Structures are given as structure tokens and as C-alpha cells.
Image 1 (cartoon, rainbow, N blue to C red):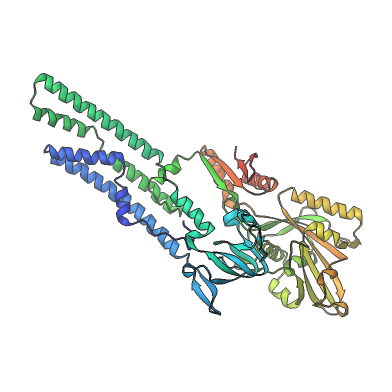
Image 2: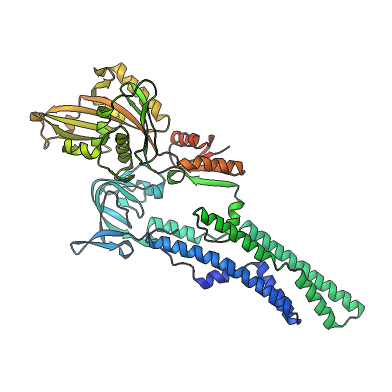
Length: 548
């Protein structure tokens, strides 16, 4: 389907109908009907034409209905976006945007066109639809060198990507088919449609039948001429045999069979645009699939938690709060204090199993909900008075909350950075000094979790006397002598139904290959969960896994 803004009109009905007569076998049948009529055999001519007509109507009806369904889906994908024109903000349909328009974007918005970032406030964008990378990309307004790879153009926004954090303004540089996603759509549209195996076989059969019929006609005419038969009788007999050699019922049988297959797929909520594509699916021997968003949910999910000296497993999938946090050994404990930074040092919001903001922060909110924290009640009780937004320079985020005569600082970020800024750690027995041996232990745990293909974040907290806290001063100076609380491992999990689907493919003799640009360790972890046995090829730009 073409992306929003790259919409192409549906195939005209007359072209769909004309397409039904492109088969060589159908053309031969029409020719046979013409010959039958020429020699006076009107019954055969009408029967053959009736079969051809019924076949065309069946194929046209199925493809026209699929085309209408796709057209309806496309009309549902025309969003509105906020722009500034002549100094005034207004909402306009994305299809009416033009180069030079200034678009205003907030967390949760979908980028409606390609554009240059002119204002950015803590801006991160999910570009997985273009690059396949599920982690959000930080965007800036800084000038960059020309001819950078698309994934490195940090001052550009691209159509059909999503803002996960912050706010931005961009000036549109390209719309519709001129965008990067439009170029991809054009490449797909220009790809020559290959014939299906059945179409190839039917055309081959048609050629063979035409050759056989031609040989029969020549032999009949030659034999009749040698025997001295009248030319009218010889021609009539030869044409009758030629017409009889064409199986006029075959195209109708094939079309009805494919229509039944299309109907069965429609009951499984799959729209097939071309009738012949149903047969192609049945001939499939290898399926190559992208990982992010196809084999996985494209939703970050907390899988492992290390806190209070123990490892805890987190159940549940995606952004649903259904699930539990259970220790691998021993009894469960209250995790409110150790998970609090993940809940409050967070700019995302969670509504009806949908995240507005950074997918990773959404996963942390889900983790907090599984631990029993009520985010809506926590935030008023813990008012935020200052914050340090996440930045790649310092690799952490910190928020400051007034609690009586103290200011509580909550921090989450890259483990190695949080470890260096920590002086204590929380264990089941209480708070202890973070000595080198303890730090090495935390680092080993971090490496063990990372080796499972998980993205690791650390959480910590600190306290500042309220009288000594100045939010206008350099806040980075306060982030020191922290108390290390926990580590969490996150992953974009596999879709629950994919493993079963791969099993069905294997039993049907179909190989499944996973293609991804992720790190090999991450790809391997996902491949193992999906039942893909091994990584067999690593290219310079991606990794491929194969089922065995």
C-alpha cells in the first residue's frame, strides 16, 4: 500500500476487466470461438465465448472487490497536521501540505512529509519504518555534512516516522512521491510484475495446444489433399479438430478454484489484490521477513529486572499492563522504591494499551504498573520541580521532586554512567557503600543481561536538602553520590503468534529467514525465541536468521 501522501488512484474497472483476457489460453479460446463461428458451428462458438465471459466476470469481480477494499483503507489514512501559515497555527489535511510549510510536531505525532528541523526540544523520532531500527533517534537543528546516509541525517525528519519525545518545528522540503518513503513506494510500483507459476504453466500449455492444433490442421489438410477431398470439407474438419483440442473449461475451473482460495483468505482477514496471487502463495518455498514490527511487536517490553540482590522475571507482552514481576528465587517483595525512578523519571504517557512518547519509556511505565504503582496518583504526590533531559553527551535523565525539606533526585540511564555517579547501592539488607567489588558485580550482571540481546537501563536516586537546591544553577552538578537501585532489561519482543506461524511453515516445507539490521546478539536472542535455530549469515548492513 502506498504511504499517506503518496496515494495512487485505484486501477480503473475497465483495466481490471481487460486484464482477465491477457492469458494466452484465453486468447486461444477466443480464436477458437472465432474459427468455430466462421465454419458455421455457432453452438460451440457460443459455448466457448460463454465460458470465457464467465471466467472474466469471476476474475473481475474478485479483483474489483479487493481494489475497493484497499481504496477504503487508504481513505482512512489521511491525517491532519498542525502548520503555521502567515503566522497563524491551523490544522490542515496532510495531503494539502506543500514545500515551505512549517509543521509543528509533538510527542505521538506522525511526520506528514520530509523536512528540515528548525526547532527541536528534546526531540526523538522512531524511524523504524525507514531504517528498521526500533530505538528512537535524537534529532537536532545542527548543520551536517552533505551526502550522509539516511540514518545519520539527524537534522531531517521523514514522512511516516513518529515523534516519540519532545517538540519540533520543521520546514517541509518534500511531499508525496518526492519524499524518501515516496521513493520507496515508486520503486515498488515500478517493479515489473512477474507471472505466477500457474500463469506460466497455463501459457505454456496454451502454446503447446496451439502447436498441436496447428500440426493437426496441417496433417488433416495434407492427408485430405492427398486423398483428393474437397477443400471445404478438409478445412471444416481441420478447424473442428483444432477447436476440440482446446480445453475451454480449464480457465473457468482454475478461476473458480482461485476464487475459493481468495474467499478463504478473506475469512482470515487477508486482502489479496490479484486473483493469481493466491496460487503464488501456495507455491512459496522461502519466506524472508523483516524483524522489527513484523516478527516483533515494535513495542519495547521489560523482560528482566535486577534489584534487591535478585533477578526478577517480567511477564506480559507489549504495552498491556497485564503481567507480573516475580523473583527467580525466594519470596516476592515490595519493589516500589526500586522502580520509582522508572515511573517518575519519565515523559511518556500510557492510555488504553497505547504509548504516547518514547517506546522505551512507555515500557518502563508498564513495568511500574505491573509492580503495583499507580502513575496517576504518583505524579501529583511527587511534583517535578526541575529536570535534566536525556542527552547523548551525559547518557542519563534526571528529575527532581520536592518531598518536605528534601529534594529527591531520580535518575535513569546507561548503566556504566550511573555506576560511576553512584556511591551506594540498595540491597535486601538496606543501603551499603558501593565498593569496587560491588561495582564489578553490578557490571557483570549488566554484561550478562546485555548478552541476551536486552537493552539495559540503570535506576538510582539521591537526596538534596531543599535549602541547598537551586534549580537555576547547573543541575548536572547534583547528579553525584547516588544510591544505585536496579537494572532493567528491555527488548522488542516477538509477536506471540509468530512462533506458531513459523512452525506451520516448517511443517509445510517452507524456510523462514529473518532479516534485520540489529546487532547479532539481539537478532540471535529473538531468533531463539521464535524457533529460528541459528544465525547463518551476517552481511555488512544486516543479519539473517534461518529456520531449520
